[in-house]
Length: 138
Length: 138
DNA sequence: TTAAAGTTGCGTCGTTTACTAATGTATTGT
DNA sequence: ACAATACATTAGTAAACGACGCAACTTTAA
View 1 (cartoon, protein in one colour):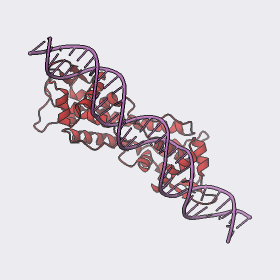
View 2 (cartoon, chains in turn yellow, green, cyan, blue; view 1 turned 90 degrees about the vertical axis):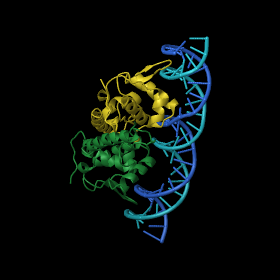
View 3 (cartoon, chains in turn blue, brown, yellow, red; view 1 turned 180 degrees about the horizontal axis):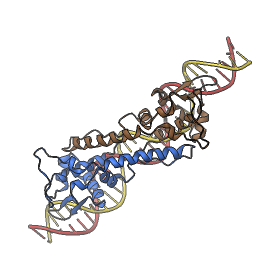
View 4 (cartoon, protein in one colour; view 1 turned 135 degrees about the vertical axis):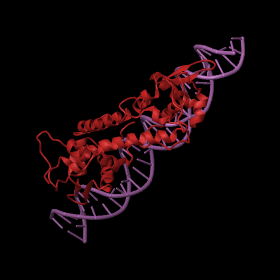
């Protein structure tokens, strides 16, 4: 199965935000989009999802922009994927009434659980490592 | 992301085969398809993929059918998914040249590794438990 | 007040998925 | 040998989904 591009883009945009130091590290859409090779229009839609999920905050009007809602260590791949796609990460389709359908679904549910656990251990901080070691300040 | 129906169906068909006792437990397409609520035609395509991956064997002609190529304990969700979709289980899309694209991909590669490991621990035997405890004989 | 910036919703085009159908090929009972 | 049976392969297709682009609206700083 393919990881949705939107989820990948969300990770990139957040990584970019995480590289912006300080609690007032605000960045504008065009800036983020350019740095990650995305269209500004689509980036907006992604950032909107992230805001609705509480991962970023926004300021409107002149000098507006986006900033992380919490420390990069407190944002995981699971959070990001949930914000974009919702949980579960792997969703099994309907169930067709076949004899083994329920058992198959249970098995994949367990696989999904393992994936989610792994994603909860991978934080935004790892995605935002910059070559000069510049780091987030409280 | 959605687990492809085809993968789910493959699990169901294999579970059905695993319920057929004995090393000569052969089943015909129509039989398998009916038990799992699938169309015979589509089931054939799935079974063909499974055969090409070496998970089942087939006999043509009168009294033909399908049977497992090895013991249910030796067939895992990872094997099945690989047969239908190929590895990796989670494939990240291209990479757009963005600043953080590589790091994001690495992170999801690790998540994929965890998922694959979990899928290697879930065997066909668990999918084929029958109420009367009837079991596979060598 | 005006220009800059985020917000929202709609539309659309291309790809993928989940099939159906038709035709081919191998095996076996008689 | 032959016909019935069952697997094999390929082509085609309709619906759903993903990945955007566009346009109109709202908020805010200067």
